[in-house]
Image (cartoon, rainbow, N blue to C red; front, side):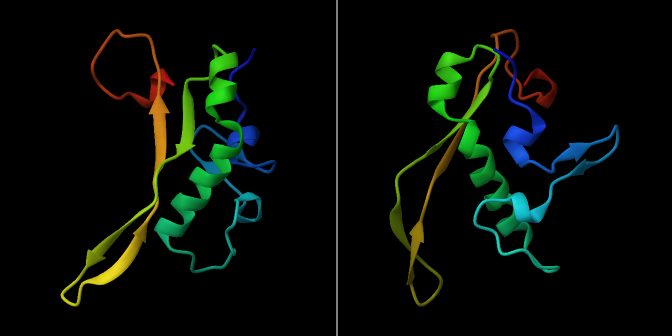
Length: 109
């Protein structure tokens, strides 16, 4: 099988050049697109979109896929001086490569 495509990971309108990546906000899962989306909301939307095809099932059946994203456990934590309760949700990103060095290098995936 082949490595997942840019469009499979980032949405049907995703494209790239040698210097830029273009991801259309309308392609991102759950995002209400605006000119003022926060960096965090964009990151979460990108991860949720990538999670659609970067599943462990696809990883297990496709030797060319190097990453999978899974939903972790939700829990609660108290934050701030007034100890306001926050829900915490996890997305686990797993990176797999042949073991030849102990560093994260984006070019390996």
